[in-house]
Image (tube, rainbow, N blue to C red; front, side):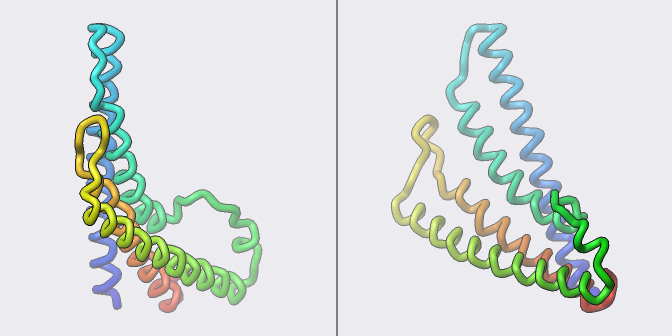
Length: 160
C-alpha cells in the first residue's frame, strides 16, 4: 500500500509542477498582452483565449496537490472538536464523497471529450482544438480520485 501512496504522490506532484508551469506561461502571456496593448498600442487577440485554457489546466492539475496538502478551504471546526472515532468517520465520508463526485465528473468529462472529438470543435479566435482544453476535466478528476484513494489508505493505516 505504501508503494501505491508513493506512486499517487508522484503523479500528484508532477501534475502540480505542470500546473505551475502553465500558470507561469499564462502570466507571461497576459503580461505580454498588457504591454502590447498599453505600451505599443498593438493588442493581440489570442492571449485571452490561451490564458483561459492554461488556467483551466492549472486549476485541474493543482487541485489534487491542494487536496494532498489538506489546503482546500473548508470549515473544519466540527472535525477538530470531534472525538477520534467521529473524526475518522467524517474523514472517511469526506473521501468517499470526494471519490463519488470526482467519478461523476470523470464520467461526464470523458463524455465531453468524446463529443468534442466527434464534432471536431475548435476555438473561435485562434482555431485551437478544444479537445486539448476539455481533457483537463477527466485528467484532473482522475488524479483527484487517486489522491482521495491515497487519503483513504492513510486513514485506514491510522495516520489521520
